[in-house]
Length: 126
Image (tube, rainbow, N blue to C red; front, side, top):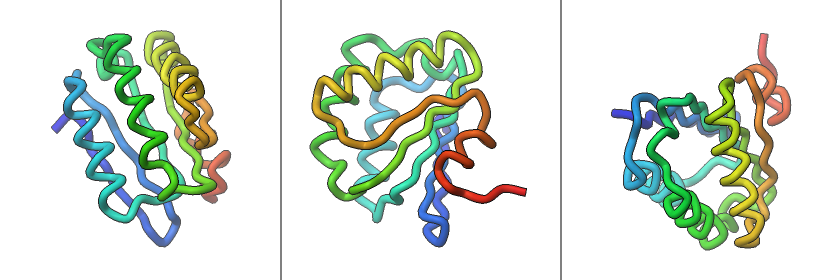
């Protein structure tokens, strides 16, 4: 399965790890399942170059249009993208800009490491 999600409701966080090259439909399925099943306020998306390679501008636009329709269930939520390569960072930046144009209110930021992302989200790591 190219998108694996693990939720820790006590810490109010879900981490999505994207492997392989999932099609757009798998990203949408992961988002729908997340928002339909008691979503956490803190989210990390762990991306890599292969995982975003096939996402078109239209696919990113569709994802960005979906988030504002469901984000009220995560009021005050934060989403961190962990993108250590140029392509996944660029795709995450484009998604954030498209989301803002669609009135996405969630706070978002891109990091090179999961440790940095967890710190920004207020999750204590050892």
